[in-house]
Length: 276
Image (tube, rainbow, N blue to C red; front, side, top):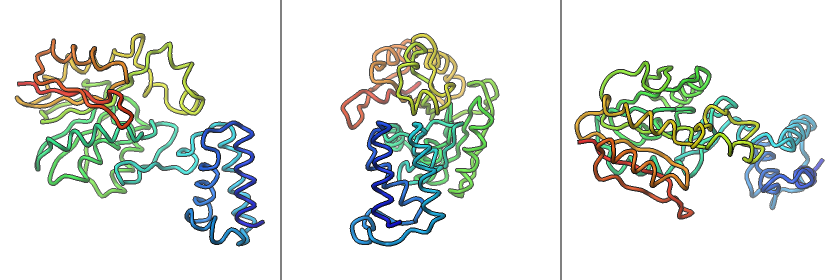
């Protein structure tokens, strides 16, 4: 079968399954299988595709028809210009989370120590370490399987990182200049309404922020001061409607200069402050 014909078949099947961005996903999956890029569809659409590649592609399409996330099918996601392995055991890195990384980098200096709470794939911590000099990082997560993915990502990026299995600060030690976290922040009652790709395929423990979505913010804010140097900073990713409440939690705990940053869509995305 020709490249263009195979693409059209995949696209049509995804459209029938009402997959968002069916055309894009069909093309990206075909490029993943064939090792091609977007120009091949335009310039080499008449090339013949080997039967084994066609079979693998149609298997990918079948999985995507069932709303399995594209990144779990390909096994990776790009984040901050880096490639991170993803599995069903970790939250898929989102572009919005790059806002958190970029904001931390504004204050990060050589040789600092960073704690990444609820590290998941490690994308936040590993990006910070990759784009800084001589900084040291610790990532903790309650999920052992998530930490295995994070360790693989650290190895792939040639980064020396400490990972700790911990229920929040339970097994954490030491002091840090920065604590960063993208904790679970979706209220429990909202999770059944999420799109199928998220609700049924990403780890609930990385999504569920308990009844009001603020449980982990309260817990982290309450205890983070024990692990921050004087003048240390606490950074959170937040849900679009949580800025005021998270800011208040931090201010009540003694954090100064608490600020809110918006994402590219103009929604509140990051809250951070300094503990003097």
